[in-house]
Image (cartoon, rainbow, N blue to C red; front, side, top):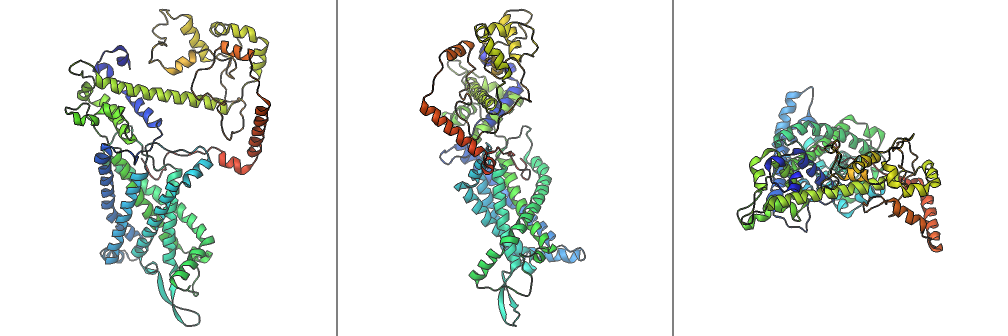
Length: 586
């Protein structure tokens, strides 16, 4: 940053690793945009991202046959006949039904990969309340995704039923009723696998929204794709099996209460009868079948594992490092260069990868770093460096403004002003306002501990040219000075609840607010008003009209009425949302 200020272009001075890493982190956390926009046509999406997504889907398809073989062995394994089980599994894998099931699973993997490409973003969507989370779940786009996952879950459930075989293989079978007549009866064992697949797909879609599984994170430490996949594979297996247990538990509870509805609908639609000689599966005796529970769990684990593997491969391929050219010889390729990509309006994934490339360039590539400082011919202007530094500084400025707005919002929304210091200021309001700056900078002894603002104000404003403090005092007039130091050295508002004392976690707090108004916080991020402006405001108070008072009182009454309702407060309370689910490691 010092290079941009002094105008001296030096590769040695630019080799500061922490600043570029901070810039990448800034950009990854301050841009609420989707990863892919259908309205934007980018060369990078067509030539890089789509091919990377296709490569991840191809690897997921290649990993599907060995995964299916392991599933077949685990679903048919017999401890007393291991050799017979292995030979039976081998013949099953080479049968026509198994090959047809594998083709259907290939189609499911392709659909999952397409949904990953369509729905993923580089910015996590974190709802602030349960009502906001409910709005995300009921969004038409999300409902379409949930429907697609349900259909794919049914297909996977049918493939699992065909693969397991036995009592799960067919949907209808001939049975003998109590009166001795032979009829076609509904096979409830296959029905429960099909419904379980739909339930597992729907649960996976909902958990993806709740845990932000559509978030693509960029790793700070770069690794090869094989090493990342190898390190994440045990965690994927463990989490898929764990999540399958919870999904099976939830499905058993749901099927116990409402399982008769889809069963009766299928009997009426397919003109099938129920076998009255066996227990129905929506009873306690039917659901306590250990073999059924094991097959449900192994099928859910197989479904979640294949989908999580597809997701993991997509993340690994998409976040792979891409080296942008710093400068181009031909004019038609100038839009692909690093300075142009950073400054132009591009899809967010392109800028994320460009900033990642900039961070690696500043650390490990002296030859490319020298191209950043190259001068244009003719003219001798550092266009590359000017464009890159301008974009990075704008990102830092944007982050600073967001932090200031967030700090002011939090400070005014959850804390109450101190009443003890307010009465003391009322008695000496005139003297304190007229000498506000002198009181802050004067080293008067007091029983209360002063804030760091007074310390910085005395050290900076009191002796700006002192030779003893010059090397340690920041230059506040510099455009690259820290905004936090400027806020600390600014005059402290006497109306602030933190004037004259240190912030304490034991300060009295207000109840949760249902919403915030513009008067609750300074949304423009402006510094606190000076004592002179406070004096003028006190001398000329604005008197609200009777209508404004009436509307304000009605508003407060409505807020207090809603705050006492348990359901309303449950929906508007803040939720704790994880950025990504543990079952899908980044």
